[in-house]
Amino acid sequence: MKRFIVYIFLLTTFFGCIENDLPLPVIIPRITGMDVKGASEISINSEQQSVTITLDETTDIRNVKINSISLADERTITDFDTSITHDLSNDIVITLSIYQDYKWKIITRQPIERYFTVEGQVGSSEIDALNRRVIAQVNSSVNTRDVTVSSIKLGPRDITTYSPDIANMRDFTNGLDIEVTYHGRTEEWSLFLENTATVVEMKSVDAWTKVAWLSASGVAELDNGFKYRKQGDNEWIDVNKNAISYDGGSFSAGVDGLEPTTTYECYAYSGNNQTEVYTFTTEEARQMPNAGFEVISNAESDKYYSFYDPMSSILECQTKWWCTGNKGSTTVGSSYSITNPDGNDKKEGNYSVRLESQYVIVKFAAGNIFVGEFGKVMGTSGGTVNFGRPWTLRPRKLSLWLKYENGPIDKFNGAPDNDPVKEGDMDRCQVFIALGDWDYRDYGGTPDSPVQINTTDKTTFFNPQSENVIGYGSYTTDKATNGWIKVEIPIEYTSKSQKPTHIIVSCASSMFGDYFTGSTKSKLWLDDMQLEY
Image (cartoon, rainbow, N blue to C red; front, side, top):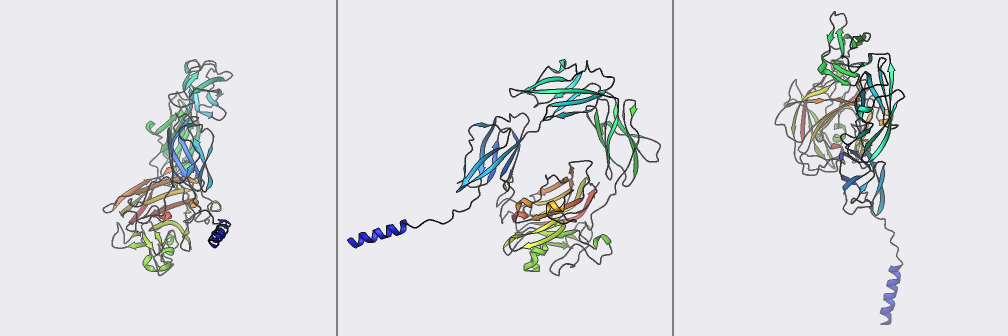
């Protein structure tokens, strides 16, 4: 009996002295969704551990109800109280915890449309929302002691009041201070008028290939517009009033139907006053090399085809413009080529290009073709590609012929934060075009192909909202096409005046191939791409 007691004592003493130095598992908590009353958009960035909320302009930013926060792991704990409203006028930080704490930043944006116009105004008003100042220019004949305000909006629509009201905003001799009230709070604004001798002024002339964008300022109440003609012609052509946009005394228009590489003249008018004549020359209408995928060779490897040929009779097809992921997928054999010419199923010429998603030994690979260069394979984890080729023209759309076959997603390894896609959903293909002024020193690529994508680092994935994107358009579908269809992709530009330095076109049979997510049954055929100006 004594031996038994001693034995128990020794065991208790021994195990009681053992320290548990095993590390806790690392599980990084992630926000996957958020329900916010009065929000128009919510963007989640897991890499930066941030959520950006865009509020409708009528929502009270200081009393926002966040109804719920969706988390990737049900064991996650958050210190945020969803039962009350929150002041989001400044960024806030919430804590998510699994074994240790992780800080997430909640960023709130609230764009509010603001304007101010008066009779006799020249151009549009300058509105400084930060300092709550408005400056408008008026014709020198306007008496600033007795001004008629045509319109004012300095706060959210429908809920903002002004003191004095619009009818009693008359004397602007020394500026006018007004009170702007909404959500029970009052802001002090200062309104100023400046006399100008200028009646009409051309602000900008931006010539593209088949369109010129004209912008001018004149007197709001007068007949404002533009005239243009081909240099050497006698007759001036009026720009259709339906094509002109007006903002107080500012007006702008796109003059369409112009000829490439042709010189034109134009002027703006306001009433009987007109600007000097401006001359501009339109740009060329250039197409991307080998956009019908007719030129192929084994110039890089006998394991797969490349879409250029050093021996081609077409000079621009002698060097690489298009690249694929074949260099990575065929490291284990030529049978794993994911992008191939197809001479049997095409829309025009001798070939189309066929993109096929496959499971390559240990990783899912989406069939792809893109403007740029393949970088390198990074073991079995992924690889890098460099997007882009030098380009300064501004097409207005990309057209192409497309055929798609797909299946349910059977390989799932993640997806973008804001996309609810899951295993079993139908796979999607994507074709996108982007024009921008990316600097390879900032984006990790090369001078010719500046934007590097590293499939092992989600922070490098292409972002169409980045500040260097000037124009962007995309086509996606999760529906099989049942044959060839013609697709037109309009390109939306952030600036009419800014010129791109590079163009990117990227096509994939599985849209989330960067995440190694998609269907092994997906195939995408492409043919006859055209840039339309």
